[in-house]
Image 1: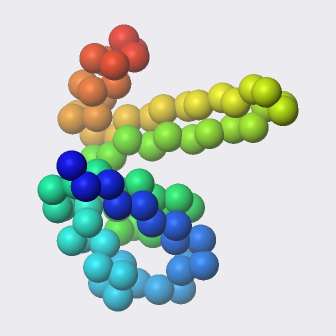
Image 2: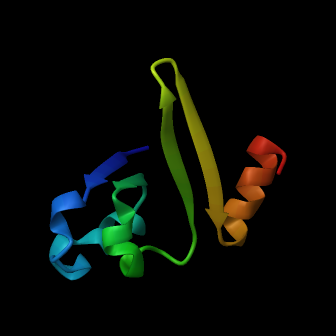
Length: 81
């Protein structure tokens, strides 16, 4: 399965149409979007939000937030929540 990585940090003034995001979001692969707040209005209705936090040199924290029924079910199956 293809994995599409998009770092949209410097693209906050660019439209999703110009970027062709729909092609990736609704294609056959998995899309990972860094700095998704810059294209939030263009994200699919359902997605899995994953935030990583740097706690200290050896510790990280991951917060997973499902958005939509499909990802709520996935989170239940994987994380039991």
